[in-house]
Amino acid sequence: MCEVAGPKPPPQDREISRRGPRPLDNAPMVLLAAAATGATGCSLQFMLTTGGLTGAGASLGTVLWFGAAVFVVAWLVAAIGFFIGLLFIGLPAWAGLDKLGWMSPGAAVAAGAALAAFVAGLFGGLPSAVFLLLPGAAAGWTLHRVAYGRKAAA
Image (cartoon, rainbow, N blue to C red; front, side, top):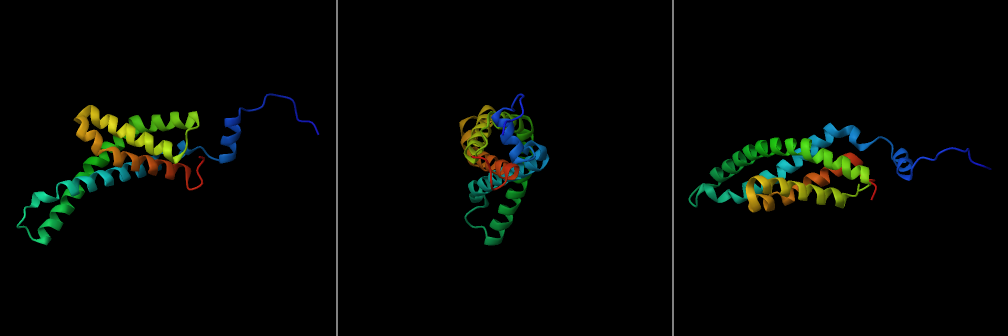
């Protein structure tokens, strides 16, 4: 038969209607999950790099308690930093990448790593930028996973 005359929606709008609700609709959950993941990565790295501060003669209990305290404090500081960074830099970047159709896990991981390293490099130089590459990538992956689910558009 024949189709009804009239303007057709652009191809990306047809893709959006097939995918269901927009991923930016659950931005608060995505923001919290990505910030928690980034903070966990930062605090794990920080705990591992400062593990030798307890001294060679310390008991195993002292080392474990010190490590747990370092992890908790570093996690709280990093969670605040990642939350603010994701709110003001990550979410606008995510919206832009989504608008361009770059919704693959690889794009999210690369954007997370690059943005975290760039911002850290501005404030802390090259060592800070390198330190935040993996936590930023993990936050980007989590952002993508929570926003798009397992069956994400590649």
